[in-house]
Image (cartoon, rainbow, N blue to C red):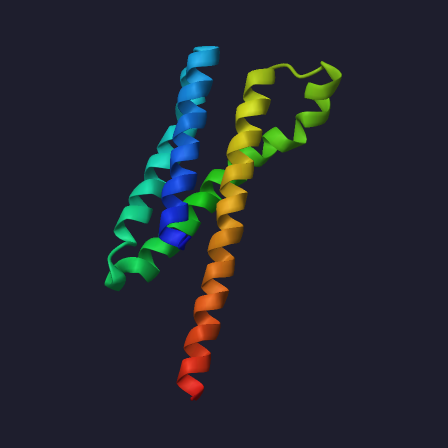
Length: 126
């Protein structure tokens, strides 16, 4: 699966996370992953054009990083969630899912960037 399709997949998962969180908890902040998912999906669609792929995938990686940074606090709240001490359990769960999805896409994107650079270096050396 190419990285533009993965951007669409991860974007869709973020949208589902936000919509599911809103349906379950009825709080508008649960919709935050929807915004990041839509941006990631748009980047994935733009990346289907060969001449825009590089820029779109860098933008997608930036979106994933910007989604990960504020949501990583959810991962730090997991111990409190497991012990029943979390003040807002829904926020911990939704932030954690968003952090994991954004981090997962970021890892895939960086690996793709490295592979593309190696391929360019190899083809230029021949």
